[in-house]
Length: 349
Ligand SMILES: O=C(O)C(=O)C[C@]1(C(=O)O)C=C[C@@H](O)C=C1
Image (tube, rainbow, N blue to C red; front, top):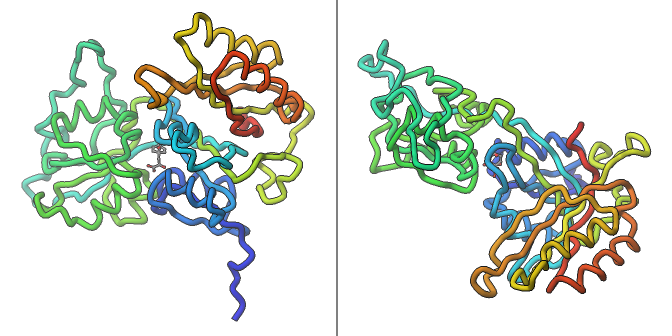
């Protein structure tokens, strides 16, 4: 019998199916020519690409309202040198509209009640850092009185603060590896320490369908225009000329003005006066426009950091000579540098 999947290129993504990363992978690659393989964690996606069991990987990178996905940043800076050949070769953007999923009790006692849960004061809780918290954007469609625990990915919790602190104030939060994993836990209903239906998940409308859960509230994220950026990773230095395996929309030229992005990890001794400013000057001198800087502790010594610098530019960013010259000059002002790839900027598409 012929294996119809034998020639398909494997794409590893943060699963299980119906995670936002899965939706970004389907949107970027489609299913016709690619075999999409769910992984249990972002680290597993990196391992699958590094050990060549997958050709590409899709991982979340940053959210427009809640900032960077630190798990991905840590894997990219690769302190333990487990992923020496991982490079970024593409990006994808996805609108993220979170829902609260669970089981609506059939018990009539819950019908026709105020839709606000008993955990609710009707407005978000003021804190010292947020004296005027934002009002939640949406209201629950059912009573949430029975909810005693909410499961989700830490990024999703961070994106739904106003809703949670208004309608599920004080309710236990359990962080899990993805929003679709949260939905699967709630669908199994296996929490022995909770009354039936006592668990809810922050996840997508798609996950509600896949897991047969009720949607108790929609659009519960704080920002209406909530969007997450995903990175596509591959093994080996990226050569955009050789992107035969990537779907055209990830790299196709739309004209000579197609923009590029690139990522560099730099370990900088900031105890040396002006070290960070000098490193940034190197980028400027090579015509590389710094668009974002993230830092993570190096764990070599306290208060020592590795910076992830993202630069934007035109097609010249692919020029190996430009890259070599910029890195050589960077080496004179920084401790260590790693070029993490160059890809087509899809932010405007
Ligand atoms: O949990 C998921 O469904 C994911 O794909 C991860 C992830 C993330 O880490 O940012 C992706 C999109 C949303 O921002 C929330 C969670």
